[in-house]
Length: 290
Image (tube, rainbow, N blue to C red):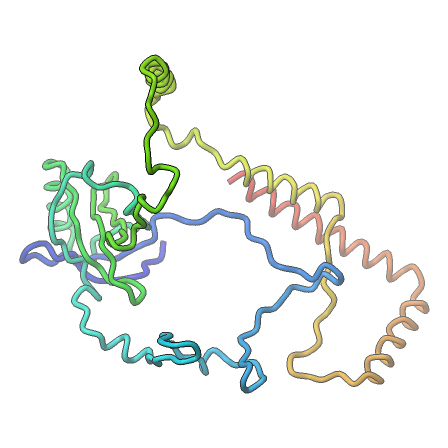
């Protein structure tokens, strides 16, 4: 794995150098948006309506809206110079019981790996947390945002869960449907509890599968095998305005060459297309069996 952050865990007067890794990955199947008519992939441009042109990434700045059409511009250098103590530090504030933290606060998981020479204090902290059955509440700054975090023992390592601050959790009082709890029948409640007991099993995450993703992979595989693919036409070079006469002449030449080559070119194209489809089908099948 590739580390995305280097810093230290601040534990009292002890600093433990660590590297941070994403502990999870998104396995969703992603689609591109195509033009139904020709199969070309849609390109989303950064367009300035005032200058009436597409702008490059280097021309963009961050703007905080204060009024309609009025912004405060903040440069990247100004963000980097903000005095955030947790920019390179997982600053442990308190130790609590894991059961006290509601899962609604959790955001994303990261592995914390000891840097070179930091194994002993790292495993000392891990063992102390394991034996005391406590987790650490900390602050850390990642991606220009300071987050609350929970550091806990997971298997052989320490894992850090970024958390939401309390003011980022929406209040349940805003849900009208739970404003008043109805009267519950004791017999119905007893049956519901027995049903929960009957369905209670030890948590075994391996037995749960993403059946929708598997079905989607099978659908894509079947479409590749059935030659239901869309080939986008070659795009014109960026920034070049094609003259109408030039386009007509190129089209005329292309159709003339195609008729002279006869069926040979079509067969060659068909063979290339079948090879490409077989390769794509193989890749989808390999993905489905991971």
